[in-house]
Amino acid sequence: MSETNSINVKEGTFAEAILNTYGPLNTVEKFKEKYADKSFKILLNPKDGQYAALIAVDKGVLTVEGIENQNKKSLEQNKLGWDGFMQTTLALFDEIGKGNLSQSDIVKKVVARKIKMKNIKMVAKLSEMSALLED
Image 1: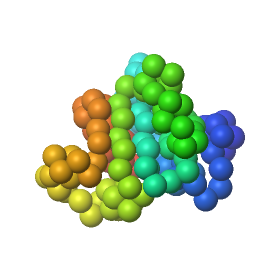
Image 2: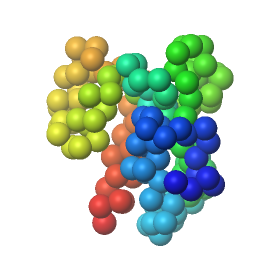
Image 3: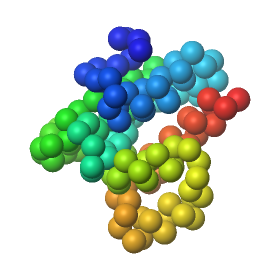
């Protein structure tokens, strides 16, 4: 785990899993080119986990910060400055991460309030970034 692209990421936490998933983007040239002039933050919060993951992309560099989620005030948008937000259970994050849920499955879960999202367009950037990892 590289110290340069992680902040407060503890071993065995959700934030570490996110870092392991998206961290390799820092070595992908297509990612660096596509996001060279972009800056945004996406907060992923597993409501049944101890740590949320704040993914920050700043001029082609991705960092992941682990944030304790016991106090909901520590996750507020005005405190962390996130642009997109997704909250659900660890199990559902796992299903989404493995690609087991289609976009329509995810939409159904949002409507059923199993997944909470704010600024869906921003959260959709995660699948764009995942596609760059697969190339």
